[in-house]
Amino acid sequence: MLPTARLTIDLDALAHNFHALRAQAPGAEVAPAVKADGYGLGAAELARRLWAEGARSFFVARLEEGQALRAALGAGRPATLYLLDGALPGHGEALLAAGLVPCLSSLEQAAEWSALAASAGRPLDAALHVDTGMNRLGLRPEEAAALAADPARLAGINVSLVMSHLACANEPGHAMNPRQLAAFRAVRARFPRARASLANSAGCFLGPDYRFDLVRPGIGLYGGGPFDAPDERLAPVAILEAPILQVRHLPAGESVGYGATFTAGRPTRLAVVAAGYADGVLRAFSPDGYGWFRGARRPVAGRLSMDLMAFDITGCDDARPGEMVELLGPNVPLNDAAAAAGTAAYECLVRLSPRARRVVRGEPG
Ligand SMILES: *Cc1c(COP(=O)(O)O)cnc(C)c1O
Image 1 (tube, rainbow, N blue to C red):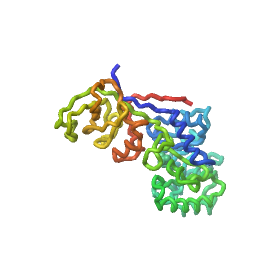
Image 2 (cartoon, rainbow, N blue to C red):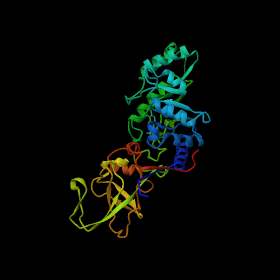
Image 3 (cartoon, helix red, strand yellow):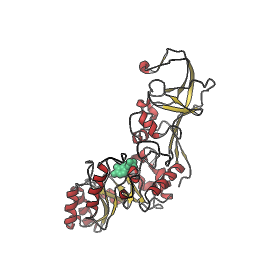
Image 4 (tube, rainbow, N blue to C red):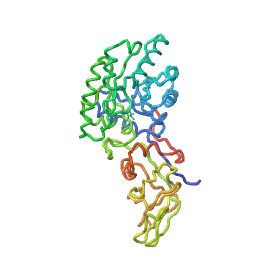
C-alpha cells in the first residue's frame, strides 16, 4: 500500500481538554465551540464525545453547521445548539426545524425573532449577543439597553443567555479585557434572569471574574494553548504525520526546492516527505518550521510544495522510505507550528485538508 499523510483525531485528548477547561472554570457550564466543522477536525465526532463527557450546549456559526450538528447528535443526545450568525432573514423556519437558538446580534434580528414567536404562537429561546468593544458581531450596549427598557420589543423571546466576546483574551495584561468585562457586567445586569457568557478558551484562564455562567471554548479543546503558546494542561487532539518518500544525500552547496531558498552548508541527509500544502500544511511553515523524527526536531529544508516537503535529518543515515515524520502533535505543538507559519493555531487546524487520511482514535462517545 502506498503511504499517505495521516491525520489522527484523538478523542481521548479532546475529553482530557474538556475536563481541563472545566477545571479552569469551576461552576460554569462548558459549551464547546464546534463551528467550521469543529475547527476542521470533524464536528460530528467531536460533539458526540463531548456530549458523552457532559457537554449539553454547543456553538456553531452557520445555519448549515447547526443543522448538521443536530443531525449528528440525533434525538438521543439532546443539546442546546447556539447559532452565532443569529436569526438571518429567511432562516427562521429552518432554525425552528433544527431547534437552533440564535445569538441575536442586531435590533433587526430581535424584531425578526419576535415576529416569528408571534406567528409560531409560543415563546422562543434566544441569546443576546452584545458587542462590548470588538466591533465584530453584536448589539451595541445602548441597543441592548433599549431592548431591556422596552420589553415589548422582545415580546415572545425568552432571553436565555446574554453573551459577548473578548478581543484580546490571549493577552492577559491587555487593557481591553477589563474594559470589556466592565461593559459586559453593565449589560448583563439589565437581563437579570438570563445566564451570562463572556469567555472563549483564553477567557477561561483570565480568572473567576471572566467565567460567568457559561464558557465557550474552542481552540483549547483542540489543544491550542490559551496564550498563543503550548500549554501542558492541554493535550494535542490533531496529530499529522507523513511518510518519507525518499532519503537523499545532499552535497554541501546544493539547494532544495522551489526558489532554491535553502542551501546545504554541510553534507546533508534529506528526508523528502509525502505532505505539502495540499494536505493543509501551510506553505509559510518554511523556513522556520520543524518536524519530529526519531526523537529529535528536524528543520524544514526549503519551500514546501503542493505534495512534498523536505526535512534535514542529517545523522539519520539509515532512515528509510515509509518511516513517518510528525508534522503536528505531541512533539510539534500546534502553537509552535502556527508561530513558524506566522499565523494562529486556529488557521493551522482549519486548513488541514481531506487529502491526509483521517483516523479517529479513542472512545467515540
Ligand atoms: C469562535 C468563538 C468562540 C471560541 O473561541 P476560542 O478562542 O476558539 O476558544 C467563542 N465565542 C465566539 C463568539 C466565537 O466566535
